[in-house]
Length: 241
Ligand code: 6PG
Image 1 (cartoon, rainbow, N blue to C red):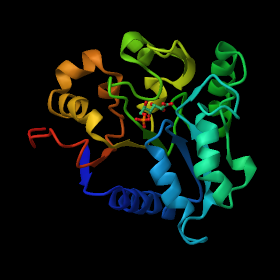
Image 2: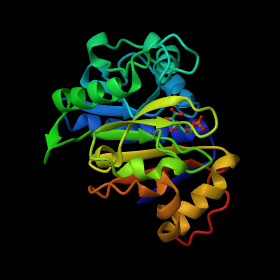
Image 3: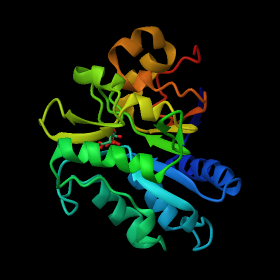
Image 4: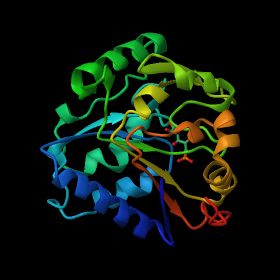
């Protein structure tokens, strides 16, 4: 586990992009699963403002770690957020974008997307293996759309499952721990003071945390887990990790 802490989002986005380019420079093409919610907007805006040729988007196939079960035009859609903050602003071939169809029946879409992963990305020991999975973390310790009240979904044998938001009841399609922990590189992007308590618990007290918080169960077999934090989210870390 590597932890990088940044004073500003600009510095975090710059460092994350250099990390991505390092991986991209060493491969013909890569597969990335994106996180949703609001945190990635800053990174996507940063990528949108880069000079045209800075990142060869043709080399990247984009997927999602989770999606809300809403139409792609809905304000809640992670796909819509990514279109608005990134894809509408860069030259990315449509065939490189593999969205989870939030408008479809959730159980059916979880199966369809799980099968699509087996077709579209590298499969290692029977598990679809992303080059990079970007994850966010909720202030309740959820990640992707695996929430604490349904933490057993993390251990599903499926590639994707249907989850339920604990407050709104909104249905979500989410990758499971099997796929997340098979990724070659996993990067948490976590910013803001409201995440500081869980960041401290998960990083400084992993034994307790991995019983309660899905984000604590992110332990890729590759050992390539990076935390990109701003100072606010890292504000309660004491350096004992
Ligand atoms: C989603 C995300 C989810 C998100 C966290 C953090 O669909 O909401 O994939 O896992 O990363 O909830 O959300 P914020 O970035 O909005 O704090």
